[in-house]
Length: 92
Image (cartoon, rainbow, N blue to C red; front, side):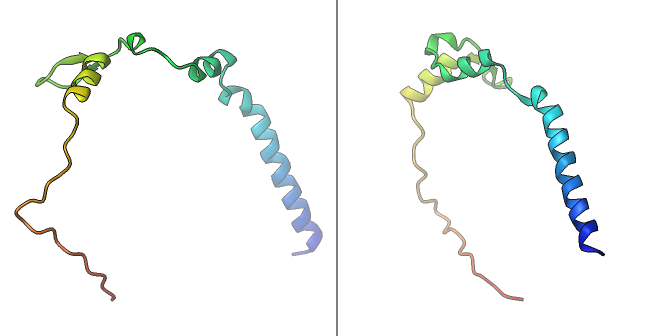
């Protein structure tokens, strides 16, 4: 290949990428209202979304889930009666 054809290909590729990015940017951009809304912290009372935890627990609000987590945080895992398997690095 000649060096001029390589240069033309590189320039054409870059120009086509910039053209596609320029035309698709307005569709990918967030609105100013969404950006402002995401930067503002919300109070816990504003989270009234229900989360479905299946048929065992039903639907709970986010406030109830946070309350349960605060009342009973997860406990660290204890050593089980089985020894954890050791991983050995093996070659071929």
